[in-house]
Amino acid sequence: TRCGVAVVNTPGRNAPAVAELALGLMLCLARRIPAAHQVVRSGAWEDPTMPYRSLRGSELGGKTLGIVGLGAIGRELAQRGAALGMKVVAHDPYLSQSKAQTLGTHLIGLEELLQEADFVSLHCPTTDATRGLIDSGRLALMKSSSYLVNTADAALVDEAALADSLREGRLAGAGLDVFPSHPVAPDNPLLGLDNVVLTPHIGGATEETIARHSHMMVDDILRFLHGERPLHLVNPEMWSERGK
Image 1: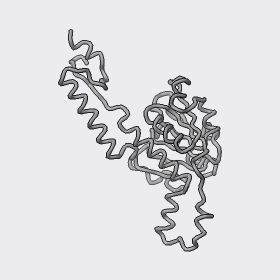
Image 2: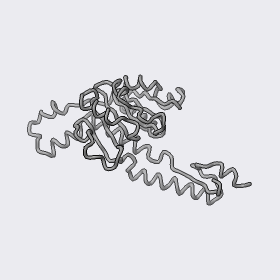
Image 3: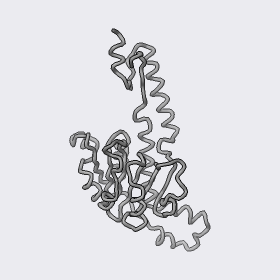
């Protein structure tokens, strides 16, 4: 800023992609898709009625989706959840109730959300206030039939407490796209659980995200070259000083 350099970014570029992955993890957990795939692939599908018993799942329609953080990704997921017939509630201390209602959701407290939701999906940034947000005490508030999905940041969840809850049946399952380390440590307890779906941080890994990011960046560079204020200017004070 002191040198007059404009800095731009691409906010929301991966929001649709991450929201769809979160939804995909919810479907995998509810319908046990990874386990069903393995049954077919391993040749274990001999009795045609067996999967109706051992792989019986549940539908998302009619369930309650609790979204923690109604930023760009949370809003995309809220739309998709509502389209599937889910009741959508959210927790976001920086959003007004009236704004949330225009997004088709209703704001409630975090503890109430954890108690009510069948699916809890995390979409908040990691700050001092949110680090370790989902700890053993808050996990205990969730229904034993509920699922936790985290595509935001591993630091939001106490991983050891989550593994204990999953192992002991106090939580039905979890879908995770983020971890404390890359690769995941081989002794990570989540690797030995069959009620989790784990993906290698692929939330934004779509062709559309790359195209969206590229267009947003190039468009702002062209605006700057043409003497126009970039749309996604991170340091607007640089622009105000430009003509002085």
